[in-house]
Length: 353
Image (cartoon, rainbow, N blue to C red; front, side):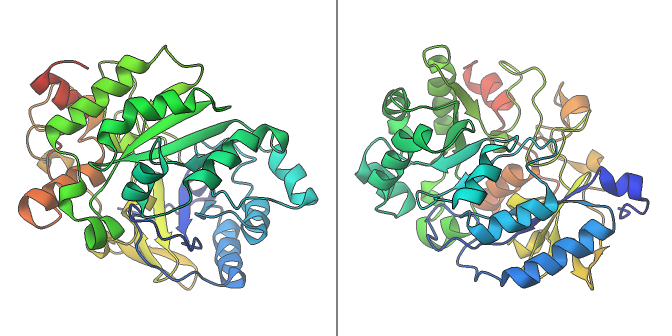
């Protein structure tokens, strides 16, 4: 894999800087207990990459005044960006920053993992359910951007999906997005593989979400980590912070890279950052140095992808979820693992959602 050399090519490449400044450290966090970095260092790295012509995105988990100062440099939410700004219930910008936020071309999202405090706590390990609900209910008094809720689906809240949707009907939401729990970070250390949905449970979650569409004012969305849902989304692709590409579902390592700022290691996408086995290079003196090709031989991706009729336009679905599933089954990551539990395959196996 070649690092983009021309400014034109770099302008089409997103580099997401992963910086875990959030002190909540939830059970479902994919990044584990990383220490935050000083924002002077973060800003220096941002400026180095911007001077080279890359499009830069800072992926903060708890938006602060320091985060917003970097966002002003990157213009990541001013320029076209399929992502949104993730906040916590502590988000309360001062007047100047609030005016800036309310003028951005993005949405704000906050995480809520259950319809009751107990279910939320069981999933996330946090006792902040009421504070989150209060933030959501009071949101229109302060903010003008669309608001969404993210919920990570595990065995701790699988049976709560319907109740959560019902609760959210009373909220001023534009979307409710469901994200499957991945087997990385704190999920490995705290929850264990028993918290990850089985194939049948993933299919059941999919059925509940899809069957509820049309019953809410807000959109019910499936995160790209589930894999392609060609039954209900014929153009299924990953849009995580970078523009989607034709003829592939996952754009990791193609027009999107991630840098874990704690180590300066480079990964194919932000969701993979922190899984050292998936590092493909490093940021060295401000230069993106790729040490190995990422999926250079996509023809090696195994079954059921190898013989799938959607292979030409999908190319193996979300590689992170496919590899996480493989780790649970076999004890190690395999970058060419087939994706047996993508929504398209689950539909073929258990019946359409």
